[in-house]
Figure 1 (cartoon, rainbow, N blue to C red):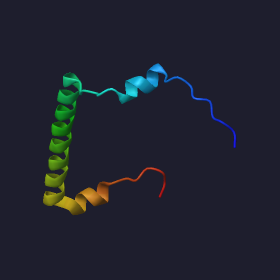
Figure 2 (cartoon, rainbow, N blue to C red):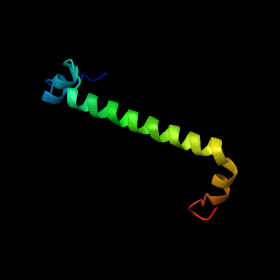
Figure 3 (cartoon, rainbow, N blue to C red):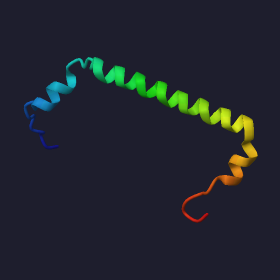
Length: 65
């Protein structure tokens, strides 16, 4: 069996082991996006509740299927 040569840890390996703290700006942006998506989903739900049949008739699927 051959011996494996141990190489020193790279800077990338060391950084990966360090504790990562979330960036507050990114966290806030994520929360804002989640709120916007939730509002959009609620709006879609309302449209479907009011008139699902018309929505389905007007839906055009892309790709020719």
